[in-house]
Picture 1 (cartoon, helix red, strand yellow):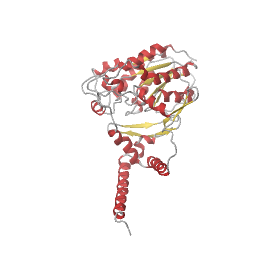
Picture 2 (cartoon, one colour):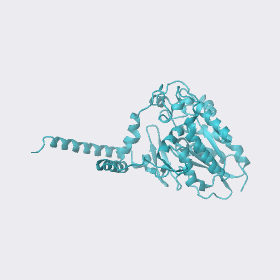
Picture 3 (cartoon, helix red, strand yellow):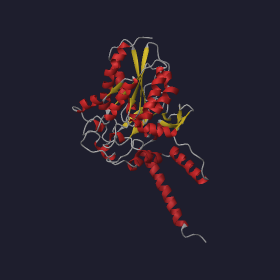
Picture 4 (cartoon, helix red, strand yellow):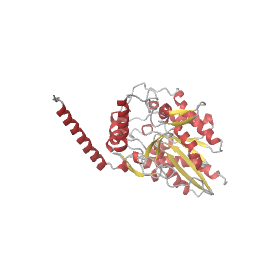
Length: 383
């Protein structure tokens, strides 16, 4: 005897499929493939994620729609040769989405602006400033990418633009990393290592991968909708930096607890030693977040991340980075004062929700870096 539940279940299933197909068509119309970050960035078995060489597209949100052009090396920069041209020196800039230029065109990101300032300085040698920034990269990934690929660009100086969220990211990436017997990082997987389960679990995993790869709706929901519902720590919560990337900016955070920085500082020392063996100096640069420089900046992002409006938050983490640099002989460019000064006369410098630099913020960062960089460039000798 036919079940009385079968017809309505089939109706519900068919209706669901039709609705999903309609939504897929709508997403494809509203956001074609080349405006999804997945079009020019992919998971990577060694570096967790990487830009796709020679990819072109746009990165779109409610606040911006920035064009992306990835060069043959896999960097968001103009085309450059792998071998350094004769009579040329190079500054390689490592960093995350701030360095990449999240939300702005590549020409407006601060590495490109530093290049423009260098070109206008009338230096006796030609210098190339290379933007090797990529969203959500941290010192562990910088070390791997530098060691396995970017060292071949023969930089004469490497500037690592350290983001405060790197402390959180390095903790997360370590959970996905493989190390050799001596503790040397070998790779960071894109996803946790899986143990085969029951057939239905395996089928669900395969289905998830298929949907992720072949539908726009999945990635639209993952990129745009899911973050709106993710758990966020309360402003007064005593939450560690391992679960809250902004923990060190909250009122109850103990800034004497420098152990939170141990992984990140350890990877920076790996980078220093890797470069030092080749006679290449390493500098650090650190910039403030929007709510560290002005009570008006990041006004909608503050609500989302449980920060108070109309106040300026501590800049102690940047001082921690300065202290680390001094103790290890690594020069540190702290951009905090430059942003504090500019915020008195210019607003806004950051996107109000996203929190990354607007072009005006990138201009401040570029000027701060260039001021410290210029004496080094002038003293450089030809090879």
